[in-house]
Image (tube, rainbow, N blue to C red; front, side, top):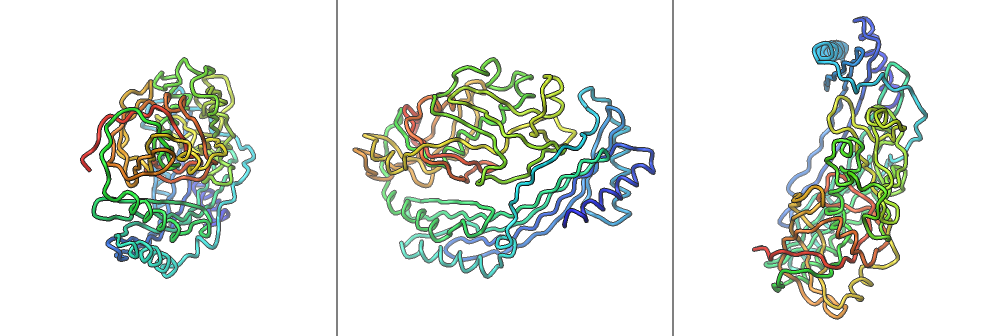
Length: 446
């Protein structure tokens, strides 16, 4: 669906709303196509493709607003969704935080659509997966994972003249290699298909499986750890919902009363940058506000947070373009995280560690203390003992209880940043980290 088709849909919605006496209306339009090849036990067992589209209409009457959504685009269905949005708007209570609909501002597009990704065929995915499986199988291991390609568009229009459009492609490959008593994992995503090498990811997963064979048990305690980028994403990624003006105002953010203080180590700088070459996503927010680059943490000091239009109005500042679609209770959140890296490689970090643990990734992460950002979770798919600068053996997995604030105060080295994929809902650009005093609380049973 191109911009002009989307614009035509909005014009129809606006005409219908005005016929009902409603002048303020917003239309969000999206379409998404995804194809996925899934494999397990060294065999491709599923190939699926899904295509869908949706239209979401928000009506506004003074400070009352509500939304209705449909996946049908014929005239009668558009009329129905407009009528539903208007009826819901009339039924809700006024909200003093609702502002007049956004007036248009220029949006710099983020070009993230690649035909090579959009045109990927089942045959291409099957051939790549087969090569990856053979790599793992040659090691006497069993492979499981997915290879997916997708394309999507998102468009936003309102009756005040907002007209924003974004198109994007994405490829993802994830593989777990398994042996009798060990496993290894690798995952990558990119908007352009050629930036992912399934066979290289398979080699990495198979190597981790082989090196972690016959894992030993190491007593729980505080250790120097080398966190690979996926592990950094999974753990440090838990804190960014707190970089929200609404969360800070509600005093449910760990940044409450801490902005401008030296909270992390001086080697920690974090940005939100939708235009970073390894990032993805729209360059406008849920009301059509252009996303601004934010300096969230400057040399360990929290400097900026995300503002929606509503929270910005309350604070007397400009919105940053990080608000969610209205109506919502969450407010806003930075979603294009970039943690600045350093010059050390993972091999350098291992070589400089007298005794410690290398962690491939984490999972089952839960929050224990929201103000100190203490998280608990477990390691998996490649945990190794480091002694005298070398990987000695695989280790049985650990459970940890670790404050992310403390972790970011004990970072000894950083690798160059890459686009990383993990358990988190969205990918980030992060480095590997060598961290001192990481708190493992117990050895797990598996």
